[in-house]
Length: 98
Image 1 (spheres, rainbow, N blue to C red):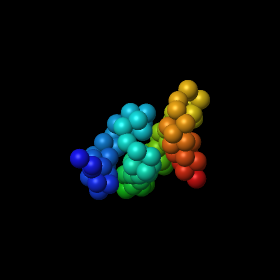
Image 2 (image 1 turned 60 degrees about the vertical axis):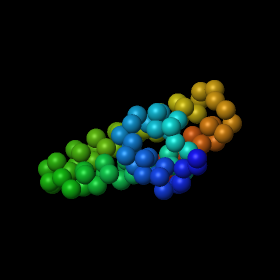
Image 3 (image 1 turned 90 degrees about the vertical axis):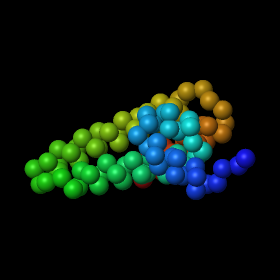
């Protein structure tokens, strides 16, 4: 039985706390992209809601977290993988840079 995109998105939104590599391997490209963007949005929103004294250090920490995500995506690009998976990861890198 085929799953609808809505069902896969719902499951993907529940799994956004999985390690990046595991999340990307588990879901199709569009859902993986959506999940990475949701994780970024959630973490930045939480940082912005902190008090004035806590906000800047938290934003710096989140910057490092996002930099680590990017480094992991780049490392994945350098591994041997199939054409479809490589295209998926390269797309995620391109979107994440923006």
